[in-house]
Image (cartoon, rainbow, N blue to C red):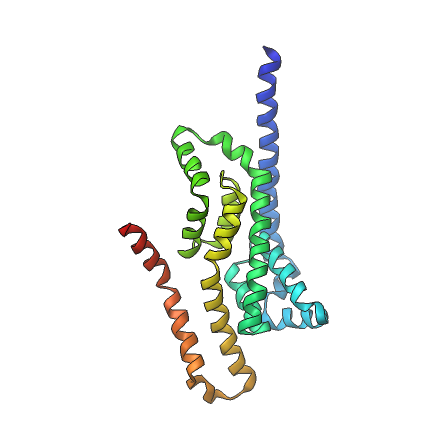
Length: 232
């Protein structure tokens, strides 16, 4: 009987240790970005100079930086804007999307590995039904939250604390961020092209107006999705 009681106690201690490491990781990550020289590289000019030294490998280095940035709680919009400003509308979209997917997957894994056991121990009967529902409808839940622009980084770690299957999370994320990522990178990339060319007359071009239209439209996407979901 004593041995049976020791097992859950040891399991709880293990879960609490992992949770403590998880909290410490978050604190250290925020500290690194806010109070170390890393912060100085989070501009298009500084990051662009750094990537120039990588030559052919610059896109791969950027995707690794994006991945690490997501795990270090660097805002996704900042990283996406940097990618578009450095690589342009189309290549920027590709590199940003791959980096975002890698970062989202890494953050999910960190949350699942370090925080899931402790989170599960806190779930009561009322919350358990929601946890089970997320497991059953993981893809749809993740897709919906991505489409309504739920904060990117908190969701990455937070989903790792739930019972959602990684496959559902991965594909829901991949599909859910495509539209928003393309619109944002196309908008920033287009403005960057005009800036580099120095031909300010291009600000009146169809491409610029189209990019602005897409950017403005992107803010209405969450309302459209919520309305459609409410009518179902």
